[in-house]
Image (cartoon, rainbow, N blue to C red; front, side, top):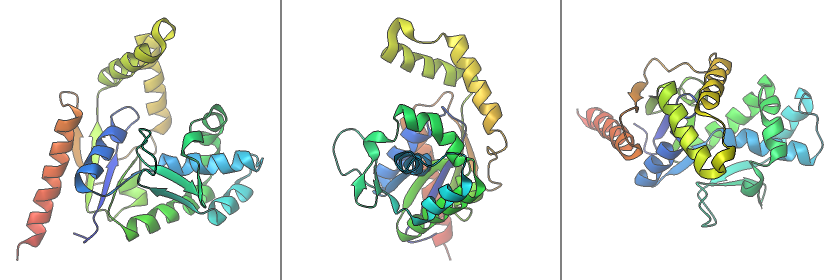
Length: 231
């Protein structure tokens, strides 16, 4: 195991990767990285420069030239990390409507993904990280020290997401059936990208709290470290 370990957590949308990944990183005192933030950051820059989200050449050049970095939170406003473009903190605008509308178009280009994955790998080589996404263990960090494939049933994910939406939107929240249908649609869209690494540990958290899931991951990390330390 590396002196600065790399932990990859993958799984479908809505399984709790963000919450769990951030808590694991906090427990270990290392950087938490949401790989999607890189694509959102590039989309912020592309929108600012009025680059067509279908122009793969200009987007790839922007991804290569832009100094996008994720660091530990620089402001105590509830954020899980800070995203910098150069010296500018762009974290507050990663989820604006304009970014939400364009990020999937920006991120679908192979050349864009290649450029940003190179930056993610370089960052992970410099420090210990817990990185979450859909293909971290298979593509981004294929030699990660610990790989987790996190799963939750569609019904559980729909109920959790629906509860969150009701809490934030009240009577205007979509129905549970609508939420369930949207999750199934997104799963189908992401299916090609959602393949667990052969050496990943699968954890189903239908009956686990976030803290219990974190505890299982930390136990797996400890067991792996202990095995490799034995002569």
